[in-house]
Image (cartoon, rainbow, N blue to C red; front, top):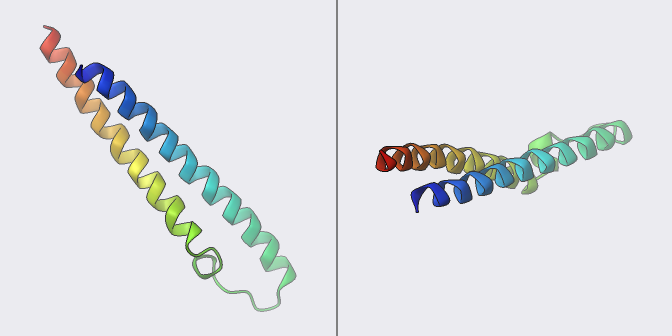
Length: 81
């Protein structure tokens, strides 16, 4: 069971990390376009609020879940011996 749970966690972690990265990339692209059109633009965190926080949070959760899945794989390996 831990190996299967580890695979599920790894998949969820990678998906969350990818979601965070894609969201950040899209926000950054939109922000660059915004800066070209406005004389005195606000900062990225102000412009992209709350999306920027969601993208960074999703990436952080993705990294955390992926790392915990490694412990599940290690524990499954130890149990199989």
